[in-house]
Amino acid sequence: RKEVEQDPGPFNVPEGATVAFNCTYSNSASQSFFWYRQDCRKEPKLLMSVYSSGNEDGRFTAQLNRASQYISLLIRDSKLSDSATYLCVVNKGSNYQLIWGAGTKLIIKP
Amino acid sequence: NAGVMQNPRHLVRRRGQEARLRCSPMKGHSHVYWYRQLPEEGLKFMVYLQKENIIDESGMPKERFSAEFPKEGPSILRIQQVVRGDSAAYFCASSNNYEQYFGPGTRLTVT
Image (tube, rainbow over all chains, first blue to last red; front, side, top):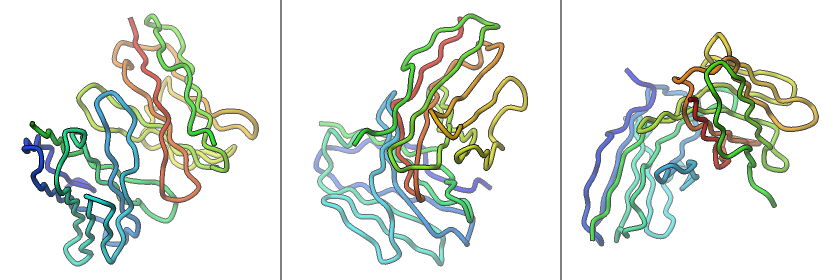
């Protein structure tokens, strides 16, 4: 089993729709969780950290379910510019190393 | 407040030559990470360094690859005797906690 698993997609979604991704992780001791986005041929960029209580940043909402060991990302009112690969990231252990999911590809269609 | 800098952005090497990739972390960051990404594939961890120390090099091929992060100057990823399979994007990230910030990457092409 992979340490961080994501549905690779692609998710083809019409503009304006709501889309949600899930990600599961295997290490129950993980404490820090993130979503990054990566545009084609560009570097990954931090989208948001995921906190235990859940957090929202504009159209983006992240949730953490420790019991089931999954993280979710919800995008409301999707824009064409949201088209990207979304990477689920979890801390590895006691140092600052991260474990990266393979990413979920999102395509927003006009 | 400059972000993570990488150079060169593009590097072309013939098979058998050496490639040197440089990464200057964000100001105040003492942790550096190198990743490799093949076309249409995910990010693969290579090595994690702090100043003058290699913390984890479990993702680094045993031969031809080495990395350093000296007390002064940028982190260097060195690939000796490059082969076609080394062609990829190499990203460097830096952090002072769990949040990693990436440089624009070096695209290595081996001809």
